Length: 479
Image 1 (cartoon, rainbow, N blue to C red):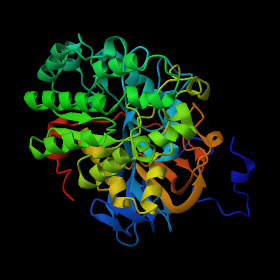
Image 2 (image 1 turned 45 degrees about the vertical axis):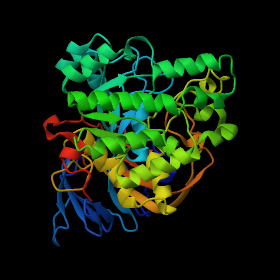
Image 3 (image 1 turned 45 degrees about the horizontal axis):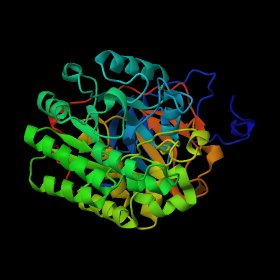
């Protein structure tokens, strides 16, 4: 039941953000009008009203007198397209003590993430079409937001990769994986790039370099050595190798979680060659933390690829501003605090971020590091273009009504006790941010508003039109 403080009595004005009582079937309004918001359109901010019919954006700046079933007064707020997070690990099946699709999608809803694309390194791994379809069916029953799943490459499953549909693309672990998901043999990589057609993406850390570094620093218990083991060379070598494969085989390729300035040089050069094949992304932790933070946060900021220097973080910001990197994604990889607090190197790599990523970037915009329009490009439009998502990433007539109302002036402090993720912690615990989502809509229905959820809402399977050709082919690089 809802807390008593959230129930409107006879003499109370109903909360405009109130959600239906969970015990009462929600009525799906035929037409919703969002009024008085500053709306982020593809051309920039405009103070225009937006009309939703069913699951779609039906009109922008309608005339007066429109008959609607519900009006949302968004005065003082900004209306943004929902975030598309193209790199998450939600742990279901197999590791659901850390996270599951229900808790993770709730965290997404709170954070303004309306579509997620999840990686294949679950237990069992998503390396066959059958397992891909099993995940999609599981998500349909559990997810409060929209969902998609990559299929994972192994050295021997190229026929499954060729047969796969209903997926954004193929994930390759060129480093930082174990078992059949690790693909670092040249022959296997050549076959995957040559014989498949879906867009490819990879974790790029050179396994040979990482193992040699680990042997050289064997026995260390200092988490700061994690960045010496997974060093600049490991990232640079693997990213250069993947770009070479993509260009020789004329295959679209997305570089995940770029962590070094060296990699941005490689990506910029590839873009300059004009093939329209290479895109890349940064994550909040590589933008906002550096090796200097090990002293304060220890294993909580241990991740793969590892943290790098302040100079690398500055170059990532520069690459985003220049269009060399196109996407910001979280690499949400939850572990329990008990697991994370194990002594290095028993501690696992990864951290949770989906419920704070938009707020973190709004805070950076507030402090002048970037603009709101850049944030929306990096987190909404660019990932939708990169993965050929249909109807996602922008506020435009005919697009899906996946929308977020944010208060750009709201000051709030990230606290472990308030995290929705099952892992129950954040590396930003205690950090004050300015700007946060206050209402999230999925396909025209409010799933989250001011701390409350409508758990009856279900997202939909993401749809892809890979014939579009990705980010560069759809004009993603144009202002």
